[in-house]
Length: 387
Image (cartoon, rainbow, N blue to C red; front, side, top):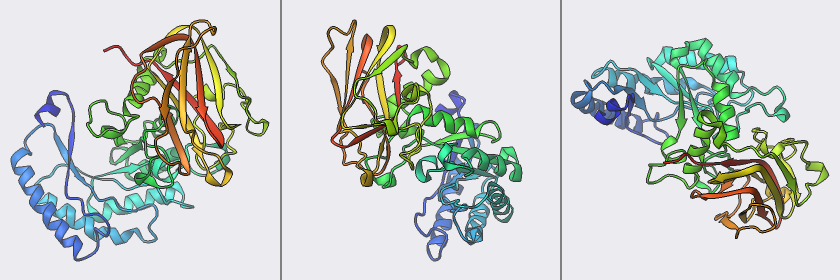
């Protein structure tokens, strides 16, 4: 907390995690007792620290998908009373939009309002579920399906802006969820869209989970964390480091049914992980090879490709990505190879080099080695900041 205070960071301290069936007896009473004891100890020891902003009740209510969300009310009301006995600081709970189905944004707003009124919780930090549940971010094929932004606006209208936060998911969509190899940091094109959709209608924008998906410091960070951190900084703070090519050439022609309608690999628009027919996906049968001209020599540290995997269509993640550089296309450097490293599974994945390349050249050749169909949405090329 002292370190957070020195850096201007507000900390919401997490309490006991109960896991599956947390709101059912006899488990619920045991968790509440532990919340009570933990809150008493932490409030007594650290409650006066200026960085101690509030509390986070870590179990997540299924408010969007539940047939009857009132089944959670009693548990959270008890948790609030336990915490309030020791502290008056704000309390945050994080439900998720996954499973919203045909429910309208206004209905999710009403569920949010009713939950706060019945429990005494101060803030709902709604997970956007773009990673965990394929919530729409405006893909054309989804038609009139609500976007995450539609939900956030409706929730904020129902409960007030300061009580509605947006929890932005930083990870890719994968059929096996958190247990599969496809659970990795997403691409910046998708993340940028998520952040834009949350906008300013919510009180705060948070992330799941920065320490592992977009952090250069965490010991247990995923391999793509450094890459996403560099891309995030380049996207918002230094556009010159987010490199757009002067031109590019397909060395393996896309299939006309899944063709490139113009600058698709570099248009900052992420493909729909639920539809191979989304116009943002460019499809090549077998290996995909593309050459990029930057117009002048550029430093390059990360090359990332957003990819699709659908077993039933023989659309597969490439086994490996190869990146080479050249000053004049007469000679190319030895390929820098990044292997996939896991058995493909239906969903999206960002295949990228895991450590900075520290390379330079006017031309870049990218090859994705694949025995099936290769479906590519975005290529993101980033120069990391000088350290």
